[in-house]
Structure formats: C-alpha cells, structure tokens
Amino acid sequence: MDDIRIRFGKAVHQKRTKLGVSQEAFADMCQLDRTYIGGIERGERNVALVNIEKIAKTLRLTIAEQFRGV
Image (cartoon, rainbow, N blue to C red):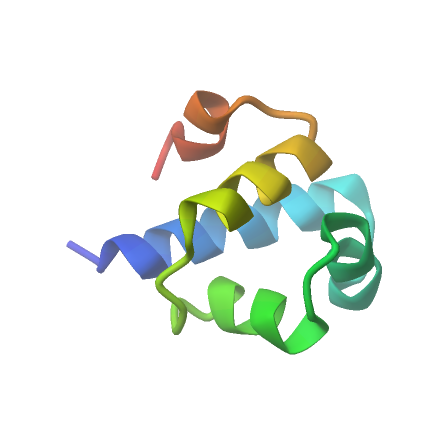
C-alpha cells in the first residue's frame, strides 16, 4: 500500500484538476506556496493539520470528505 502522503497527494491532485485550476492558482486560493502544493501532490510533504484544513476549505470539502478514498 502507498504511503499516506502519496495517497493524500493523489487525492488533492485529482480534486484540484476536477476544479479546473492550476497548481499556482490553487496555491494562491489556499494561501500556500505553489512549490509546497507540488510537493504535497507528489507525496513529498508531511502536511500540517492547518494546511489540510486550508486545502479542504479551498476544495469546498470537509476534512473528512478530503480524506475519503485516501
């Protein structure tokens, strides 16, 4: 089974692309750095809870919904 960071990153990537926004635009919407979002999507980052909340809110999801399928 893939590392949780990889699974979470894939889920963020899929949901971001479904929204039709670039990494840069998404990062701006989350108030995070573009390279940080890229690292999350590649499974390289161990994401802090406050940033998980920012990502979920930007995707218009609850934290629980964000983790569904992870």
